[in-house]
Length: 202
Image (cartoon, rainbow, N blue to C red; front, side, top):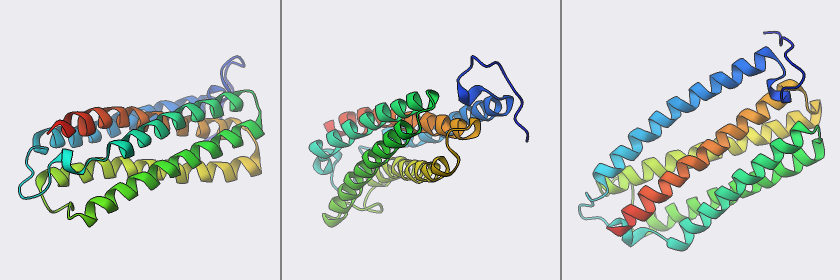
């Protein structure tokens, strides 16, 4: 599809009709993803007291671990926003630098989450042990898969930016990736509140 010209005063990612439509389409996708996570949250809320012979939530949660994950992920949302700032000012080096920082923070988050899962598995807290653990690993693991996909997505974008620079198409992709990353942060805030804080009281 060819990009049609739009008003020059709009941000570069909205500078074509095609870019605006694709961004709108991504908002629709985020709504469907939100519905998916809503189902997982509802399932966890019903099942987190159903521990069977397995450990309770408070017995496996690592306060330092999930606190560090929260700080890292929220910081990465900020650095993603700075990347968009530099993109709109046609600053390629600034865009690349802050995308790389965001990727590193995302990798740190995933590293901590995998370490948490491995630690749980070593103590016998596995997916099939109880209804609580099934809902916990499904919800947190799905979020972790989304973060991993976001990291791969940003890495591919870095390759495209290095070859093509900042074009309206690249800008649209960077903006959409930023929306995706911010969405994951919002999901994590609910996850932190519902799974770790409320669930951890049991």
